[in-house]
Length: 107
Image 1 (cartoon, rainbow, N blue to C red):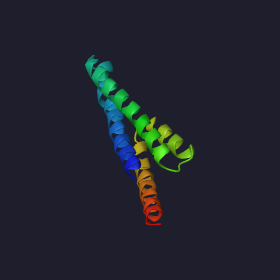
Image 2: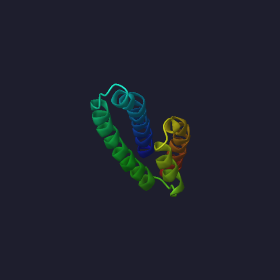
Image 3: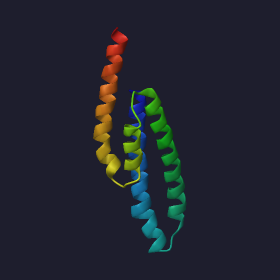
């Protein structure tokens, strides 16, 4: 399903931006007094987070998810590294939705 695939891609990119912000830009700002990294990476990460929320809404509307699945994805996005582990589950959800849509279209 396209909505979940898009959510997976955005989730991973957003998680990478979060790690770069925490692991690169923050030390640059507070150790080496170079705040520009936080400014630019922070803006990029913020935009990606908004895109993640939009992708999450799309996935919720395009699937038969309850509020449980989007809540898990949202909470996972707040903790560094967790989205990488969550991707396996999202891939299973994508495959499950794909199979359901094939069964639905064959009838």
